[in-house]
Length: 254
Ligand SMILES: Nc1ncnc2c1ncn2[C@@H]1O[C@H](COP(=O)(O)OP(=O)(O)OP(=O)(O)O)[C@@H](O)[C@H]1O
Ligand SMILES: [Mg+2]
Image (cartoon, rainbow, N blue to C red; front, side, top):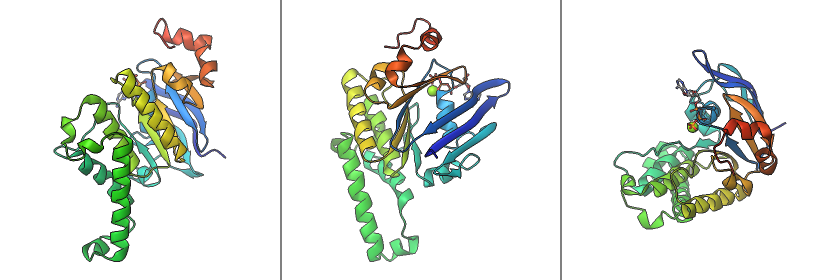
């Protein structure tokens, strides 16, 4: 049985089929690249997995249990975190506050324990703070710890989005175009970090337009076109698939 599975999932907006009959099996430890032209359903796929959209038809299973139909917070609590295609910030929050907010989700001790500052709470709080600082270091945000998040450059706001998602300590991370608008060096830094995150045991699904980025990163690539899955395979196989080349009609995919 696969770790995360989509069974005949469709998402309609009126008559528009944003996702049509999608079957997808993701194994633990996979790095799945999702590609496809604009409007092909990539973000809709992430929205359906993370519960932001309910599928019109079909089922999403995670770790053997049905998650489709559950709320985004319920799905997040099971260990699926996501980032957004545009930078989403907590207004007025500093970098560290933004990441801390997300990490509160994983506290196991109760609020009365926090109030009385029990040993269990203190231990857990220390562990969470340690983890947040480690994430800030990993994503090169440590020097900006107390900076207002809105003051970060676009590239660093994207890094912060990843740090916020990772602070929830996910088992599956869904990344919607993490390198968009970044220069080459920043993109390569993100790629390195996705690899590190994967090595920590997190299963990754990422939307990425640049096939070069996926070539050395993705275990498998899935290609969407008009809501349909038109190809799936190793990155180098998919890049040479004629239907995929035709779907991109002139846009550079290599
Ligand atoms: N909430 C919504 N209401 C109506 N239509 C929507 C909604 N969300 C997405 N769509 C439509 O569904 C289709 C797929 O959109 P989606 O955002 O998933 O594409 P995408 O592959 O992520 O594109 P891009 O590369 O531009 O990000 C598009 O035609 C889009 O207009
Ligand atoms: Mg999108």
